[in-house]
Image (tube, rainbow, N blue to C red; front, side, top):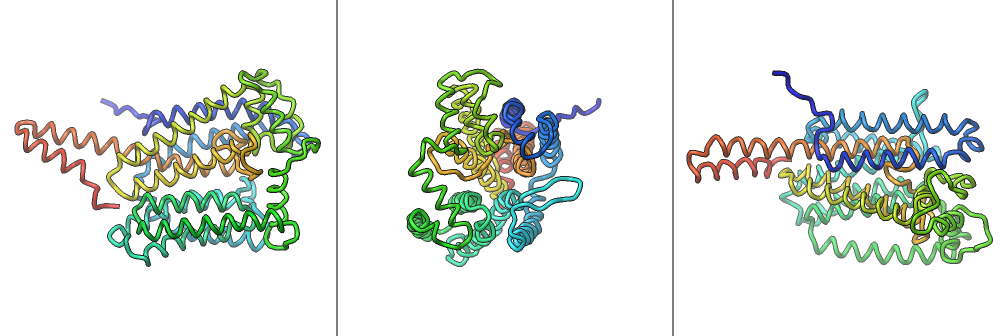
Length: 402
């Protein structure tokens, strides 16, 4: 009998969520891509739409292929991936750019690659040092790997650096590092962040450090918006107001045809304009369900590395979605974060898909472990005590492995 191949193996709910987001993405990008295609890219909207469709298809293939690899392999690869990420970030820092181009393939942002690799690398180091997590030296070593990446990212992309730091620091908490050290660090970082916001708000325009003038302008525009100024954020707010509860219909956007970033940084606002607050709530629930499924998969994994990898990647994706949605409705200043799996595709879409592949790899392994435990229990069903013991043994098989 031929073995049936399940293409969409892993967590079914995650696959459904990813497919729904992809469908929303195709509709929303098709509706908003016109301005950028014609004015900025000097091409047709259909050309850019089919390019985006290509990225969506590639992302499906990436998840299917990479999820078949045993997730433990990624523990070893993460070390080299981390080194590569640092090297690429150093290159863009020296070149004073955000993008690197692979001739004939695509341009990509190393920071998108780094935030996924860091979560896996951090999970690996926590698992390796599981018996020493109470030591201060381990805390500083783990924190240092996060700070190093953020330090290389911050000049060109503050919001991504902040996103990476928050997700990484939360992963230290999930991993069980010294709680006293963690809370002390949290208070110090919160205080420094508050002071930094005040300094950038009042003196950002006068400082010549990194991109402080841009940060200061964005913060001031958010705190003191000029309703008469035709800015991206003002048009996003008008789009949200026009959408109301039920929206004006798919393809009827007005503001999306006037915005250079309607297909990327503000696509959530255009979705509200066309499909209303009801659609916005549905999309938020999709991300919340995505994160919930990640937590379920993490809890079901007996290996610490697999559990933390899922938690870290899930946190990155969920936080990025929250930041994007908050910016689109005016709750946060402009950050430039895309809406995962919905904004116009590219390197971000593919790297996040690779993260989902790792999550699905853990989900596949979880199912195999449960099946083996059930089979072992069934084979020893002659003795209730013996069967129970065997089942428990299988369920705890990975407790002391990475």
